[in-house]
Length: 186
Image (cartoon, rainbow, N blue to C red; front, side):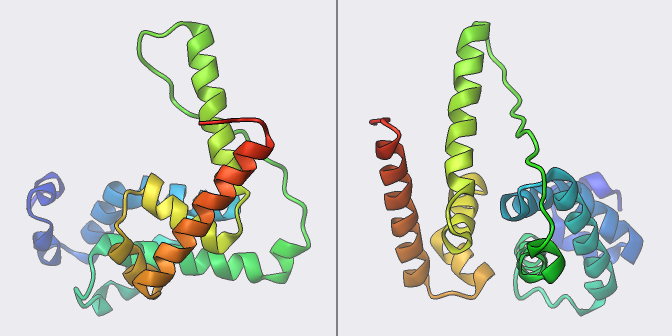
């Protein structure tokens, strides 16, 4: 079976060799894993390193995957746990990291000025989200950037759905307050 045919029927992944399964998972979810890791660690290179660790872990444990969740949820859980472990580690807490530029691919037929304004607005919003406490940030990222439902987030983070809703509510309020303090009204 060819890897590209798995898009239509992902259940067929079990018929592939372990190496082909890993290749498919990396192609399918690699960018998502890097983005998720970046939201935790705020550094592109570090997010890429975590992504590599996630897929190494995935390869080692592919035989134990029991289909109780989707591969996406499984990989997200591994990523979130690796990021949280890193953030708690002594080395991370005691090393100063430089901020990296957040790049957004612009497009459309807008003027350069409009493109720059849109980029600045997206960057401002992203920076406000990244500034939230980790427990609130992860909920916002998963819900608004990864388009996960409350129940999916609840399963992924092993939280009660009401806890997810409460954290999302608190995050929205903190973001709103932050924008109001900066003089933005919407």
